[in-house]
Amino acid sequence: MTIYKETERLIIRPITINDAKDMYEYASDDETIEYLTFPKHSSIEASKEVLEKFFLHRESPTMFEATCIELKENHEMIGMCEFVHYFPDEKTAEIGYVLKKKYWGKGYMKEAVKGLLEFGFNDLELRRIDIGHFVENTKSQRVIEKVGFHFDGILRQQMKDGKGKYHDKKIYSMFKNEFEEIK
Image 1 (cartoon, rainbow, N blue to C red):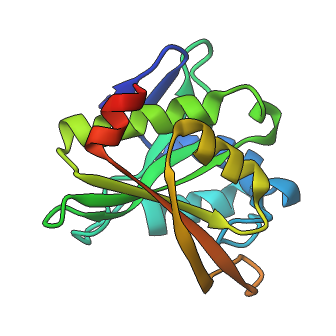
Image 2: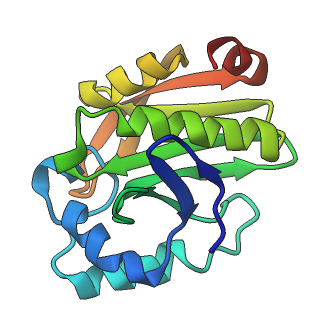
Image 3: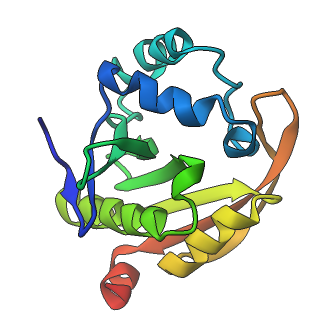
């Protein structure tokens, strides 16, 4: 198994079809997906279809391999933390993430984002990494601010949620030298 980054409690690795059950656990939860861009999953089979269609066979040069978060202690896939947009020629990427509700508030996402930043800046030699959230998603905002990203602005009606409603998106960025200062 390829491992992109290990942190104290987590492994960031490529997602596999075997993660469908764990994906379904968060993708079928209304509160977890409230601020995400995909509709609620109706079954584990639906999660398998999403994995096959969107995550396992990325061929676009602007899509990096989909990565998930695995707990070291029990090898459970607890969410995703990945580069949703990747521009190797510009040496930039954008992070997207989701975490199972039962793991909220325990510092896992902050740890995963920092691990992905380290991988992006050191292994992929990126110069800038962006991250964003729906304006209403204050929980994501807290994670992003705790990690140390700089607020860049708001893109109006930039993102559509899984129900088809458009939302304003707050966007943040970090450069490699800024990451070195907060490590």
